[in-house]
Image 1 (cartoon, rainbow, N blue to C red):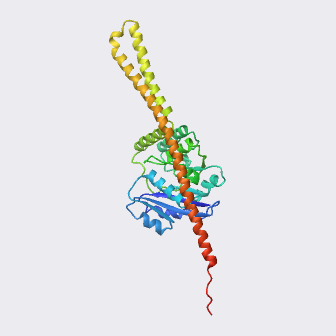
Image 2 (image 1 turned 45 degrees about the vertical axis):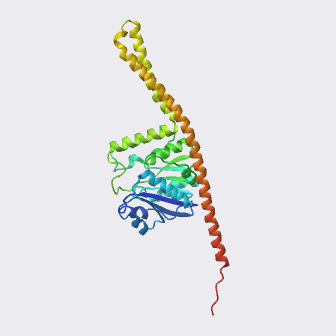
Image 3 (image 1 turned 120 degrees about the horizontal axis):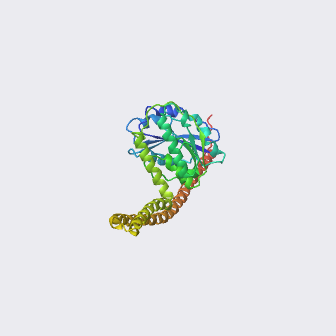
Amino acid sequence: MKLIIQIPCYNEEKTLPVTLANIPRQVEGVDEVEILVIDDGSTDRTVEVAREHGADHIVRLTNNKGLAEAFMAGLDAALRLGADIIVNTDGDNQYNGADIARLIRPIVEGKADMVVGDRQIDTIEHFSPAKKTLQKLGSWVVRQVSGTDVPDATSGFRALSREAAMRMNVVSRFTYTLETIIQAGKKNIALTSVPVRTNEKLRESRLFGSMWGYIKRSVGTIFRIYAMYEPLRTFAIIGTLIFGSGVAIGVRFLYFYLTGHGGGHVQSLILAAILSIVGFQVIMIGLLADLIGANRRLLEDALYRLKRIELNGLEKTRKQRRQREAREVRNFSPVEVD
């Protein structure tokens, strides 16, 4: 069984050596451990540092495409390299590499296909009270939306089985953490979490410039992904609220009209008509989006099957090459020299 530990990096030449040194080369439950560094268009010596400090594989993106695309590029490369389990960690040494064995154990034991490391937010000293509160609130929202029980939704320290990795299709360009959990919940991927330790902070986060910016983009990501997987429910709720507002205003106008005071409330009648029409149209959009969602699910299933065929073909080719090399070694007869 092969474990590949992927590290998305953007200008991490200072912290990457510490991160790589902290990753164990022998992990209980697996036969091989390899390290894959995804260079997300770095402008420093990240690639050279990765090679100097023992990275087995490097994927280079031509320019900075964002954490989500770097994560997906890593998954694709790891699958092509024959990974049975993929662990994602950060290049700033935020997570304790010794906990990788704990992280993959549920997958090795066949109890889960995706495991998220729980940083136990309350124990992280360099997190401010406001950040801890927002992290908890965000994780609670993700749990409600995804139907999972992950306590730390924004943790980037996570493990995926080969099967789970093939089913992941991240469309957000902001971050993969929230979207993959929602996808796991909607696709019925066996998901669990384990407590993990964190290291001392080496640098500030680069994912967002301000707390408000992070909240705004996270809310947008959650809404977008939920609407993608539950379009009818999402648009039905919005449409019903708008339509209900129109009906309420229409009832108010009808009351004034029946009591002989309707002449001064014609604007309410117009607003009621507009809201009722818009609400009905939003509900119809939900029905259309639900039909499109059915096609998206079919496309995802087709993409999953194509990945399986392609990866099985690569595995078959690697197996044939190993067998051929073994035969060549057995047939080799050294020449004796007196």
